[in-house]
Length: 151
Image 1 (tube, helix red, strand yellow):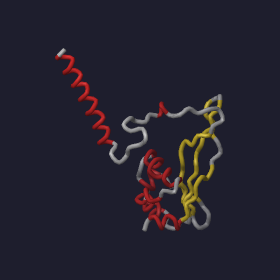
Image 2: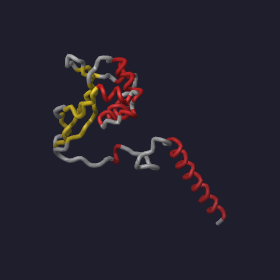
Image 3: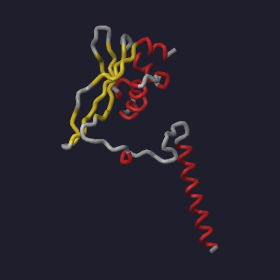
Image 4: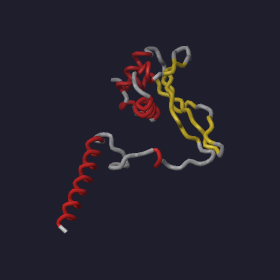
């Protein structure tokens, strides 16, 4: 009986330590699934004909109308996931106050841009597997909004 009590306490302590470590690791980055991690295999189901945004691309539009792709590695020195989660999505949602350091890099690289365009790269779910879909500009952020966020 005494041995089972010690095993129970030890197991309880291990669980508390793991949840505590996850709390510390996610401090400031917790999401609605906390204290459990989000895994793609637990994502919601998708059905035939559904459009899914696979990624976003950001373009800086010059005064002459030409569009310049804001490359994550070359222009911003970040990887794809940081580009997607910490730049493209907040930009798409017009949450410019969250991305001011990255916006500064964009202004430095493209000083004359007039607007930023967020373009999606979607896939359509079909019975024969995912198929590419037409791209769309889903958000346009004028230069004035970027300047306001950088103040």
